[in-house]
Image (cartoon, rainbow, N blue to C red; front, side, top):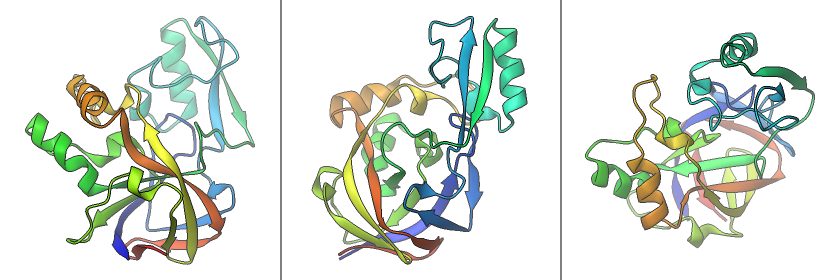
Length: 208
């Protein structure tokens, strides 16, 4: 069953900073190559000492794509950060995926089209007309995208980050409120890689 086509791909070289658009992506067993391979950790000045510094700590992090600029911004708040490299700093699973149709109810409720980029997926899929499945309908499903095969692990539970405006304008708390009340706090799916390969925008996403 075809779900849709890949509308966009992203990787996030530094966790919580701005994403990098990709026309094609090499997907390894550990996720999109180059995705979240570094992260900023708190050294002092914040209760999360020894833990990652996230959008919850600074709602402007997603506007930055340079770790040095992020460290300077944190220092202005009295927070000292260190950059750690060479690992994978995922919240849960290596791949995150969002289908545009899942945003429809949220967009209707808010009166504007909510940007998919707020949710920071690796893959954004434009649904075929006949697709009406939810995140829960896809749990444990095997998906094919390009030469890659994925297995859906779970829906993604959301925090405050999707409320942040992509250009730094005031946040919209109604985003998270609707997701919590109407979607059991979930938007999008986490996936594991069962066959690595290459994906390109415009390629179909199908359920095997």
